[in-house]
Length: 210
Image (cartoon, rainbow, N blue to C red):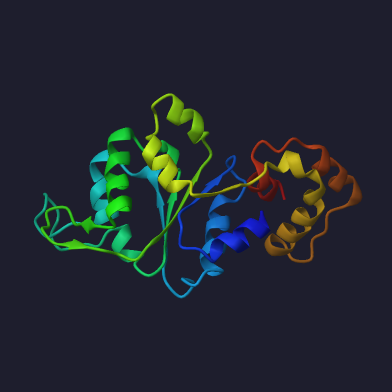
């Protein structure tokens, strides 16, 4: 995984990060950004599952003053704020189909237009997306657009579940404990217990337990 992230960081191509919840997808996205030529630019994260459908365009593309009730001034969207850097689209699998087409249009053309505006801009943005869903299955069931999937998954990295890399648990536990509770130690008995747990919540759950 680290080798893939290191190689992918040198590119400007979109990256799709997959893995269960708690495996560290946003940390991987940050790593891609900080190891890339864009490291001096902004890293803007958007949780696609948390944006109401009616606000999606204004959140991503911004809006002009007076575009709708409450728009008292011009506002940049995530694309404009990420200009020169990385735009991280988390939980991309939760995006409803009609919004997927709006995102695809922006990715294909590079054009971004504020809601209520007439001028188009071309923000210089590298896209990194993440999901804990199986987008391949979503494509088969028409829940996710095939063309958007292939646009986002040019480069793909899968983060393994913690139960599939139990040998990493001692290193992870000691590292997390040092960050959260300096001076505390994991006893041998506790480490045996940690190493045999299934960890459905992955590294996030491990951090919570510690």
